[in-house]
Amino acid sequence: MMQNLIVTQKDKIFRLVMAAIMKALIRVKRKKLTIGYQQLAKIIWQVPMSDFWVNHMGTDESFHNESWLKIWLNYSDFLPEWGMVPLRWLAAPLSIAPDASEKDILVVYSDHVHEVTATQKGFNNLAYYLAKELDGVIKERNADMWVVPEIFKREHETIMQMPLRAAIKTSITETQTLKPVTEDDDLFSL
Image 1 (cartoon, rainbow, N blue to C red):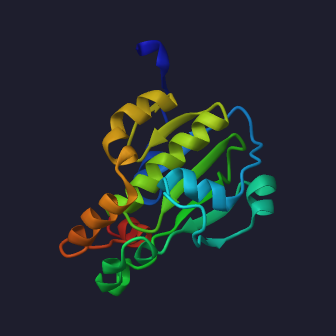
Image 2 (image 1 turned 120 degrees about the vertical axis):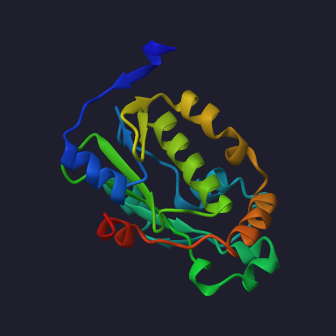
């Protein structure tokens, strides 16, 4: 099992910034994906239907050529009760962007430090999918080690495999007590 872990030491400033503004890094060996944002959303949220709306910033082209995309689902399309949650939870985008300083790293992040289960499901499946498809390894927020996709999957399998409607139901309950803290708020609270 130790041969599957890659340990990397970073300086204190990098770790401080990483803890505050990023959720996961994917170190990739390949850069090219051909999947479109609609199919990507279907895979990561395990959407049980073929015709559904995906909110997005960026296009298939920006994703393929620049590794840049922001996608999210309107959870009320799958469970109408979601429409009753506090307004601040209605959009939960997941973002993919190239790292500014290291060309072989993709940054995967969300808008909040604490996410509801349905968004965690999409996030974990997205990190796993990208690492698997691009022959990469994953480094989670606050982690000191890079892990192979299968170890990441084992650690998050319960949420990753949860049916979408069940994840949304759990998320509705979470929105009553969980406070959305944006990544920027977290950065300035250090």
